[in-house]
Amino acid sequence: MAAAGITRIFPDLTEDLLLNLFHKGAQAQWTSRSLDWSTPLQLSARQRLALARLLTPVYFGEQTAMAGASSILPSVMAAGEATAQLYLASFIMDEARHFETLTKLYRTLGHDPLGIRDMPELLRYYHRLRQGDRVDWVWGILISDIIGKHFYRELGPKQATPDPLFAGLTTRILKDESRHLAFAEHYLKRNLPALVPERRRVMIEMRDELLRLLESMTEKVRGDALAFGVEIEDFLQGVAAELEGISARVGLLDRNGRPPGAVGPRGENIRRRWFLAREEPQPAAELASTDDSLVARCFGCLLSLICSQRLATT
Ligand SMILES: [Fe+2]
Ligand SMILES: [Fe+2]
Image 1 (cartoon, rainbow, N blue to C red):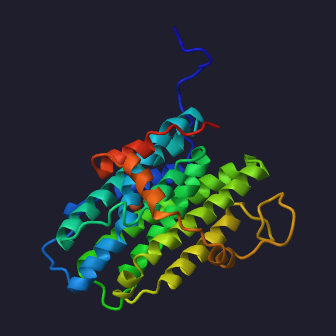
Image 2: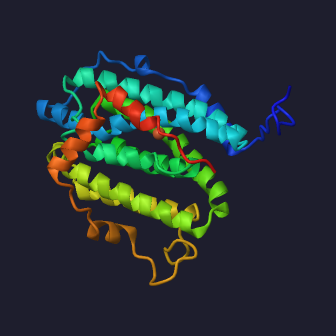
Image 3: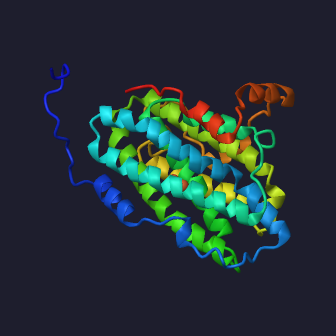
C-alpha cells in the first residue's frame, strides 16, 4: 500500500545552479593520491609545528562538514529539494577528501592537531552549528567555508614563497570550497525570503557568536600565524568583511546593515561590533568538566556524538 500523502515518486530535477554544481563536483574528482607527496616540504621545523596547530579548527571542520551534510540530507529530501540533495552528495565527497588529505598532511608534518583541552572553543563552535534547521546549517557551513577559504589562501597561495605541496593541496581544496560557497549563497537567497525577521536576527547572532569563537581560537595560535608572516587581525578582518558582504547579498541585512524588520539605530559594522563585543572566557574548571563528560574515546566518537543530535525540522 502506498504511504499516506505520497502521490508521486518522480523528483523535480530542474536545471538549476545546484544541479550544475553537482555535475561540476562529480566531474572534478581528486584524492590525496593525486598529489605528489614525494615533493619534500619546504617548511622550517617551526612552520611545520605552526601549520599543524593552525590547521586544527579547519581539520575539525572538514570532518564535521562531512558528517553534518549526511545528517542534513534527509531533511533536504523531505523538503522536496531534489537538486540540493544531489549537490549535498557531492559535497560529502568533497569534505571526505579534504579530511583524508589533511590527515595525510598531518602525518607528513610529523605533528598532531591541537587537543580539545587546548582549544575547547572547537566544541562550542561545532555545537552551535548543530542548532536550528537546514537553513541554519547552510548558513553555518557558509561561515565555516569562508573561514577555511581565508585560512587556505593566507597560508597557501598567498605566501611569498609557497610550499609546493601545501600550495598544490590548498589550490585543489579552494576550488571545491568555491562550489560550496556558491551553493550556500544560492540556497540562502532562495530560502531566506520565507523566513520571519526573528529567524534572520537569530542567524545574525549565530554569525557573531561563531566569529567571537573564531577570534578566541585564533588568539591561541597567534605566534603560529606569525611563523607564516600572517597577522591574526588581518585574517579576522578579511573573514568578517567577506561575511558582511554575503550577509547583505543573501538578504539577512537591509540597506542600513540591520536584519529586516529590526528597529533601532542603524546597524553597526560587523567588524567593529565583533571586536568590541568579545566573549567572556568561561572558567577553565567549568570547561574541563564539560569536556570530560563529552570526550569519547576518540575524535571521531566525539564528532558522532555532536552530529547525532536531531536537527529541528521546517
Ligand atoms: Fe572542505
Ligand atoms: Fe566546504
